[in-house]
Image 1 (cartoon, rainbow, N blue to C red):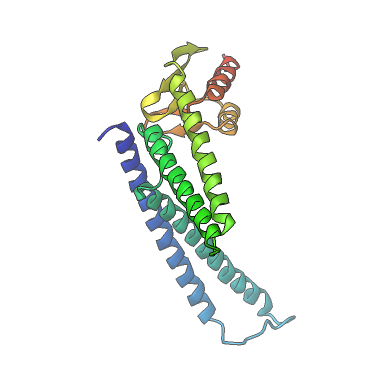
Image 2: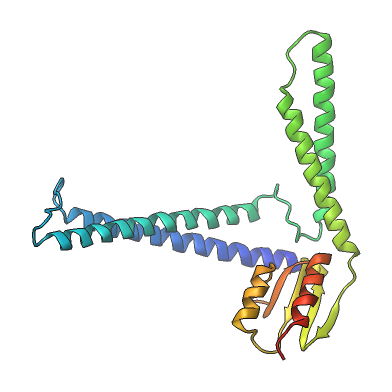
Length: 233
């Protein structure tokens, strides 16, 4: 596998693991909530002023907490399942894919051909006084075509960015065109303030690469140089 395929395989494994973990957590929290609920007789009201009131309210709070945990974990499980499904979906073109520009150009050609066919069909339908394809279909196609063109233009600009491998204040700034990443290698762990600043500017810690990274762009390079210029010490 190439670098992109290896990264996708790691992400797929991780997302599937997180989806399974959160699904189990959702199920166990739901089961705990149900069992706690079974301990209260059906329809039993809170006896205000009775010595049991405080315990009854705490018990209900536990039931609600477990149910909230179940719902939250269920939502996370669905989120990670969708991310795993997207990785396996051949129709999804990732910007990290080294073939992204070619794949997007192929997609653009298919979309433009489809729009041309619909326009020709509508022209024929008008001449024959038949029902035409709804206008929103062409509008949606136009929006998709515009988006694909913008992505192609953006990725082609990235291809023009030269490879970078330099050091500023002890921090190495390096581009990896192969997997579309700008990386920052710190000699020592950045301060909490610096880590927060990195996160606010789109950088994320990569345990696999032992660096802070984000997708390549001219702006990303500008931000990175500005951040490390202010690096402590």
